[in-house]
Image (cartoon, rainbow, N blue to C red; front, top):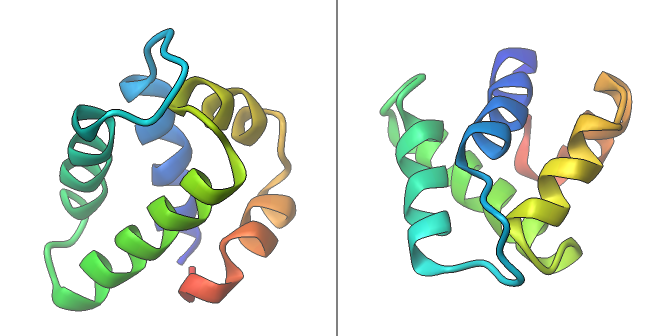
Length: 85
């Protein structure tokens, strides 16, 4: 689970562009990168859940990137706890 949480930080870092909202391309890229770790249905569900939480909390991919880079591992796990990360 820690691997996936760390991978989400990496995905956000790589996928981020200076945008003011979550584009469909941002969402698609996040999901592609996230399931690249493990393409199981369980991982897909976790990745989708994580994306939804990030989109609810942050108005853009850039904002999510900045916030998650400043979080500790424990803070990130707490943020994504409902997704079983």
